[in-house]
Length: 291
Image (cartoon, rainbow, N blue to C red; front, side, top):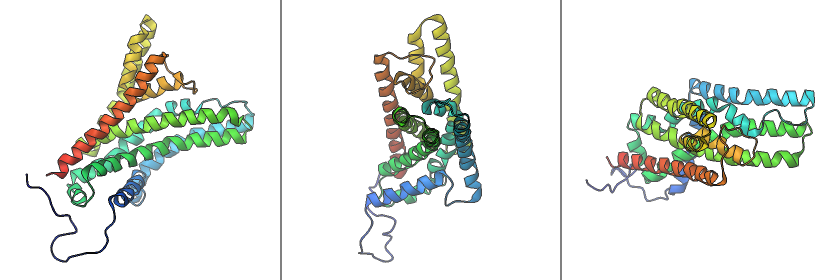
């Protein structure tokens, strides 16, 4: 294979000796653009419908809960911050599954990715930036209703000293969850170039698999073989999230209660899966950029 020596802006017609933007500036611009595209901003009106519809469905229950807490003057939230994210897992999964192809499929399908990678920006930095855009978009999606709940709790007079630690635990879990969802859906979208295929495959991984895992966990608890349920929980981002949420006493709910050893295993698995997805994304874009 012949090594590429030129870049897209050096095509031989007219020279340019001025200052060029650094890689980090290119990556920052690409990150912001990716974030905007994940919510349809800067694109057609039709592109905004789905992400904002899902965002509305994700935030609306939080607003209702805040209204109930304020009017009835409850002394605690009926749903913890972590449990709220778990209860809305289908909406969060649909958002990640639907928006990952926007960032990962279109450029590859239309072969415009070659133009991106002909710039000084490396394939690895491109892939990392796209993954960071999607992970941040998912984090914003889960964090917004959580902040609504927190603000409502404080306005209703609930104890800030009790609510703030729960919020921080929920935030840590949401960061881990966003990295997992962005990695899995981004990797799927980078290979299934058709948006429909990518969305269906992501839904199977995020929604169908968690149902199967929950069945295994319920049966294992019923039969008194909790180790099977703990192992099964490693195969879904949501059971990883829920298991750690209960283990960290953040108000989460899980069928299986984790021992201290399994908490370490769950954290290590979440980090390993996220890292593996990012490495495979880098490998995918490096391979495409070398063509």
